[in-house]
Amino acid sequence: MIDDQRVCNESADLHGQTAMSYALNVVAVSLSILIICGNLLVIISVVYFKQLHTPTNYLILSLAVTDLLLGSLVLPFSTILSLSSCSNSSYLLCKIRDMFDILLCTSSILNLCCISIDRYYSVCHPLAYRSKMNVCVILTMILVSWTLSALLAISITVRGIGKVNPTWRCKIFIATKESSPGPIFTFYMPTVIILSIYLKIFMVAKKQARQIQNTMKSEAALSKMEKKANKTLAIVMGVFLICWTPYFLFKGFYSLGIVTIPVSAIEGFKWLGWSNSMLNPLVYAFFYRWFRRAFTMIISGQIFQGDFSNTKLL
Image (tube, rainbow, N blue to C red):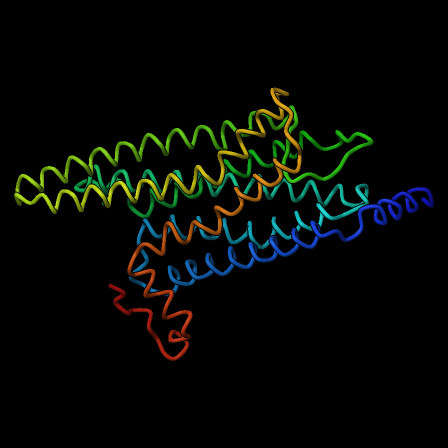
């Protein structure tokens, strides 16, 4: 016990509170606050304003809850564990953090996948949208997303318990044999689905724009609609891929031993992936006028001055 305590003290003295540690704290706290505030605005908006009680917004609500939990649970614990000098005392906490990390990151990505499916029916099959994407179907999609995420998180975490070596340190990414199938289900498959769906949406939107051009004989209308479709697709897929692709790509290289990548670099890519939870409210909510007005009413405190739940936000 004394030797262990001495090792921990020596390790703590060796590392100390470096500039990098302070920077990590600042980044983690700032990112957590932004994630919590942004997603809390989305949650309050959907729950409070009756006009936002739609199947599509229930998916956005599920995504916001996922990202809120990630910002309030995973990021703070990751910072504490990354700065911890005594690995033995933080093993259990690290495993719990890993489980919530996998659960919430997977749920976030699967929710994005569900949103893309919802938008596919909205754009490509507008007449059948109400029957295909009703509240029951949406709630089932949400339940399936959370269930699959939970099963995957528990499976990977349980299989990795007890496999500790003398040089063990709590990392913010998992690169073990037990976790190798994880990226296939948490990133690559959803990414292929999302890319395919949004490509189809883009093609249909472009076709609809040309049909409108033929009807209206307006080149300006075509140009405006095509630019809007391009912009939306670029924002949706660009943010998602920029945030998560580097982490899963280099984590795969690291696990397979293809190239030598510093652990700190992969951890940095993980933080970039987590930042997607901060950007989701911007991409999936701030681009809609009704959400912008709802956020304004919440931030200004107007909703606390009376009952505005039936307010028309358009």
